[in-house]
Image 1 (cartoon, helix red, strand yellow):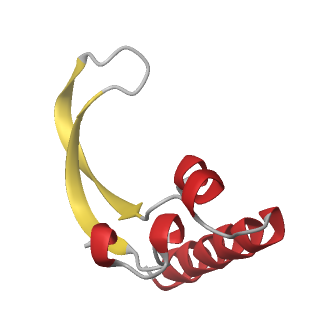
Image 2 (cartoon, rainbow, N blue to C red):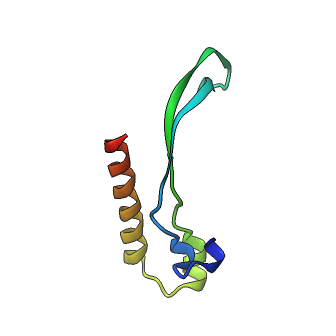
Length: 81
């Protein structure tokens, strides 16, 4: 999808909400837990700053604008979950 995306390395601000994903390992040392528990995850693309710097006519202000837009979308998603 991104190869044909006219936004290039800026991608988009679409999010994937994955509710109730079972977590069964501890975060710190990855040991198995006695039982799993559900966690909601939100996945979103980051700006590909390397590609943007090489291939796009894009300023740092534009990259920051896109990043803040993605952060705002993630915040809205968390508030409605």
